[in-house]
Image 1 (cartoon, rainbow, N blue to C red):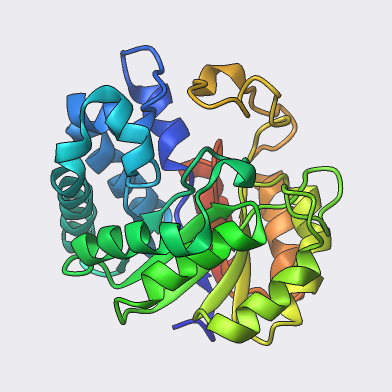
Image 2 (cartoon, rainbow, N blue to C red):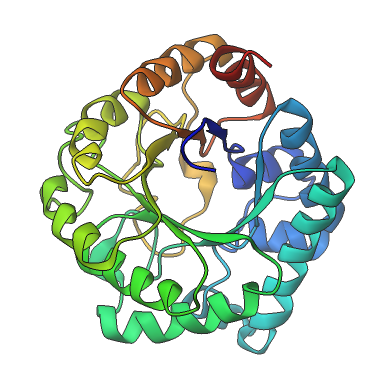
Length: 294
């Protein structure tokens, strides 16, 4: 699958916030799914209709340390199963495609320093991966911003026996550094040691992806990218419990412009390309036309 171009979907969370009648909360897309599950299904359907080859489950933020604050710890399995089933239903309705089980960052997005140590995190990620395993074709670990954080997620997900893709997030100004400040090239030893099926750069601006891809290409694994459309990650959002309305979307990244970036990634050898936050169905449709001639 990874030797030919695989078109990923776009950003579920921002699409849900846009479509939901309710105000954003720290639970983000999880809250929307609880209150309006039909919106999650509609987003999956729209991404498939735009040309995506996969549906990524709406499970990025369904993590014990995020949901326990809202007295939902006992709903962990139920929430994951619901999100996975919605993605499977959308795939079945579409008639083709794969379901990727999303595993997001513990602690908080972009804050590897808030994540538990790798050995401790691995236990939690294994628990979640086992819940998702009956539904998904493979796992996609998303927005890992530091080496140890990525190690914990990989250890847990790989223990289940299904293929795993690893998404790393890099500094928006200097794409050869992870958001933790560690050199991105330091991730090469981790990739050599644990050997996920593929490695990607995600939830960073497209310009940073441009400089990060040559680094991860050196791992010798299938690689790719799905960038975000935020102007920047604000200090306010980097604080635990923030809501996404503290972030702003770029106005200079319409679908065709995003497709320009994606075409350059494809020229570098990337075979897994899609979008993250603020990249919607229209962007994925442009990618389908540009990268696959769909």
